[in-house]
Length: 185
Image (tube, rainbow, N blue to C red; front, side):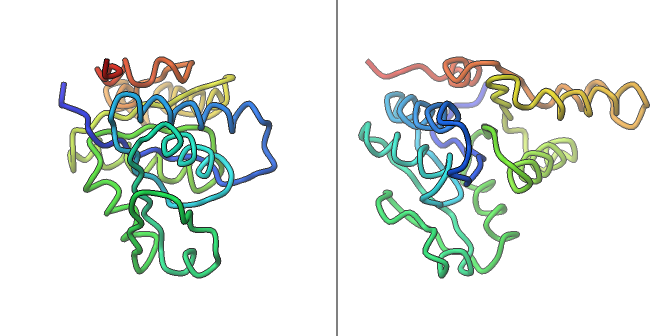
């Protein structure tokens, strides 16, 4: 297992979600801070993104946001994080996040989160990197996506080997242990 110092966390940016999802993101940020793991994320100040960043920063952690210029100009960028990297577009954003991350964690989210998750799975399948990918299936949120992956295996579009490229945990507390990361005492 590789040493994990920087975790890229994909998650949603909607404030309209149930408070428990915001709480999960905040807790993920605090857990990373307590383990001295840098959070790499999409740079937003709203939804799970904002809760994640606020949780980590509030616990004394380090947070690096990576945001495309067009979103930065819409005033959704978080102004209270350790560092903000501004990219020209979404593609450069994802490439930068993948470059600096040692591992990926997927929290609940929408189309963008789903697209980011499938892209890193594809990159790993194509051997562009060998970084762990953890899917936090809190409240069974990702069960339909997991059923789709299993259906792809049953229909022989996806091998079981490639299906296994993503590790699923059901609780936020299980994410860091799945990566071999423990809190610093």
